[in-house]
Length: 390
Ligand SMILES: NC(=O)c1ccc[n+]([C@@H]2O[C@H](COP(=O)([O-])OP(=O)(O)OC[C@H]3O[C@@H](n4cnc5c(N)ncnc54)[C@H](OP(=O)(O)O)[C@@H]3O)[C@@H](O)[C@H]2O)c1
Image 1 (cartoon, rainbow, N blue to C red):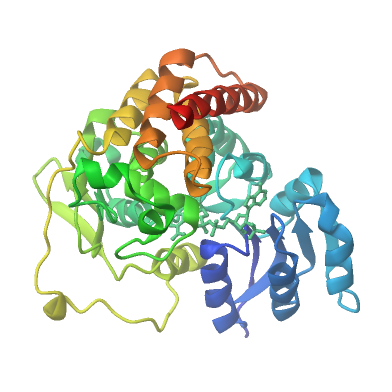
Image 2 (cartoon, rainbow, N blue to C red; image 1 turned 90 degrees about the vertical axis):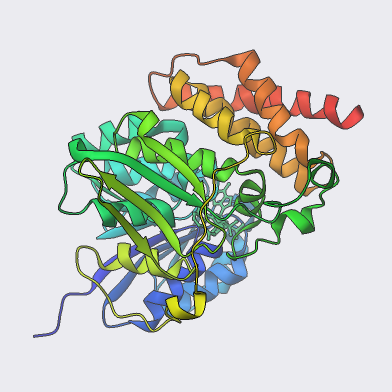
């Protein structure tokens, strides 16, 4: 008897993680069935992917692009839709797995819609968990939703925790490549251009996460993400710089044993894990060659050149709305840096100022998170303008 095909939706199908997910799904058409695909504005890539995969629904967030999408999909069975409500419809549509690969807090409402609908969520969109972690994990428990981490570090830890108890965990270790400025001096970092910042030594990713890797805010966001996914005391979650990006995450247990997950720096490995979970799927990708690699280096991060890590841990400790402020200010500052309107080192400075100003206000629900996100964006833009003028 033929196996039942797994129904999948991809939020953010035109991005780096979205395209890697499509690649895996298109290699195994007997295993998967496409339900919905979404994009912000890239109608051409969205429509092409919808046609190739016979998706039932394609959603573009930008409502002004609906006509273009309808035209691109005419003659197919795929329905075109646009705007916020349509994104939420795509996220909640009946599917066995929803890949959350929108970048930034823009993904929060769709992610929450998928969780509240009780879907199994493959979560790449870390900003959603950073900004609404407790709300999301509570909603998942209430709705019976499962959150599978796709971020390679969290996916690694998830795999290393299988069959063990969180109570026995001595520490969780997130590895970090250190990004393109790992061994650069502060003066060079101050002059860094967007091109230099997005030139990640090991991973090929979207622009925003690449800049986050260069500031190490990515690892800070991942620290907060880890605290929600794996509820151990915050001081038991550590970051280690590992330039080879071969070991993605480690778990040390009370008896001293360390379990690690290794692989090539290719997101298709953790994505394949989530797509097939709790089974495994065969993926023909280059394999990690340990003999060719020869050595694995680990070193502590430098808190002076990478203040984003400290700011993130402070926000995690402060709780409530502090991670919302941290994330919003970072999104604003990174976007301005990519537009060459803010210096590289100003990114962390703006985040710190926003946290100093807004602190950790209470957030009781999604509306509070979204309101605080908007307020923090407004303040961060004001602070960034001051830095840019200085
Ligand atoms: N890339 C990686 O290797 C990697 C690894 C681990 C975790 N992640 C996480 O995965 C997420 C996606 O990262 P990425 O690198 O794939 O990003 P990306 O390449 O920039 O792609 C982002 C996707 O989200 C869509 N999008 C952007 N803004 C949107 C909005 N306002 N409303 C609806 N859709 C929107 C984009 O559509 P358009 O194409 O139309 O703009 C695109 O499909 C991030 O949270 C990132 O931190 C990524």
